[in-house]
Image (cartoon, one colour):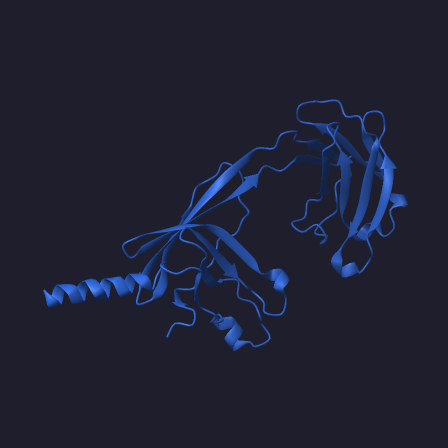
Length: 262
């Protein structure tokens, strides 16, 4: 009887160290090997803190740089425990691009021809449009913003000679209002980075606004084991999508210890 009672007491104490008091944080502030080998690198985007805010809610903290809190990220969701396994669940939305671009080159033309329309062939109404010339970052040239007016067919011609430093032009930014009042803005570019010139911008572009971009919800699950008052991450996965998912993976360290644990 005495041994059974001792086992029950032991289990109760073990459980009380996890989830019985909230909030409680489990942390790992170690830097990656690159940061240790090169002290000039102050960047580690792995999760450094797991906080159980309530009996159901958690937050993951990523603090890549101690210098700038603008790099910090938090991920919120719900958690549950089954025996020694913890499952963290969160979700986010991804959306289809709200514009499509068709590029081509017209021979012997000294202007950019931009044509605007919608994927549902809805009639556009606003002739006003804001254009910004975005230059290559290394050129150290200030971007130029202009208010312009579309033609009756909702096209816009921009003569090359009216664009200062055109050879350094990386992309053209537009800002336009649809008939329903929705503002659309984006960058006309074939480069991966809008302020880096990789090649010449084609001189003819059809911009098709997607009136109702598709959206999808991505569900993530992160599985961990609770042992010796520590959280050890063992797996992570998320649902697949029919749309491009550019959201990066959450990166973890292996072990997280209870903060201020004695």
